[in-house]
Length: 97
Image 1 (cartoon, one colour):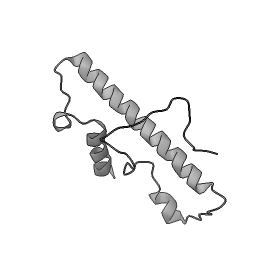
Image 2: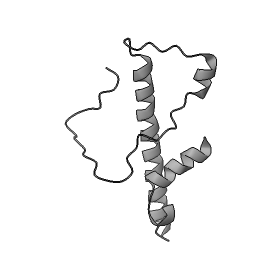
Image 3: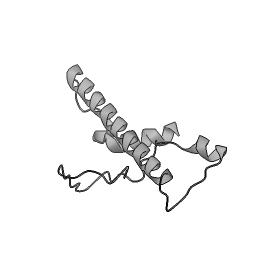
Image 4: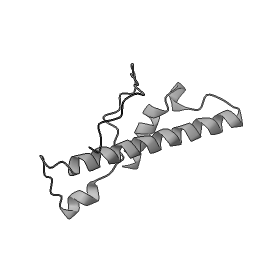
């Protein structure tokens, strides 16, 4: 799982070979802090999506203990790393009802 999440980091924090492009310490620190914020936001949205799916009355999901152990918010296959992203600040994500 950690290796898969490291792959997500290289997609989120892309650049020249996924490396920090500056030698200045303050710019490096800012880059890493921004990466951590993006990671936390991605995990938060993933948790909301998982909760939304599990709470859907039209699609009851019964998880076994093995299923619950395997449930993780560390997935990123739904992330579109390249291309145009349209952001509408006047609407919210349709999560949580």
